[in-house]
Image 1 (cartoon, rainbow, N blue to C red):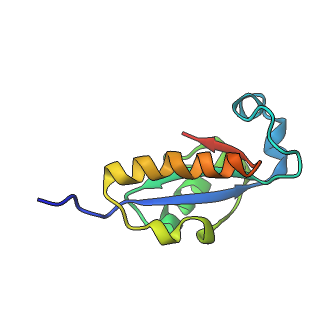
Image 2: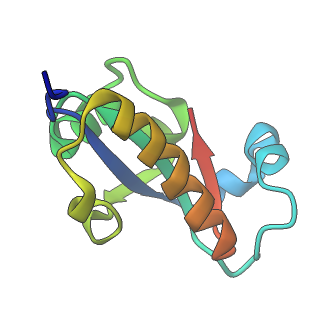
Length: 108
């Protein structure tokens, strides 16, 4: 039986102020100071619903709640929907891709 594809990966652009956070800095050594800051996640909801939940404080990541600016569908929409295991792999891969491009990334 094939895996159900009802999970999504998503990318949130974070405000540059997140760079002042010690844990965020430690997770992104050597990132390009001119690069953007992102949060990469996966969800069983739509990316829009999940972003709203973050901003409202429901099962939220603090960096998204405090610094989240907007979803970046151009970075993820071509991959959705995915099975749970494929979404886990794609979440990690998106984080790697963005880091290789010099961006600072937080991934849960």
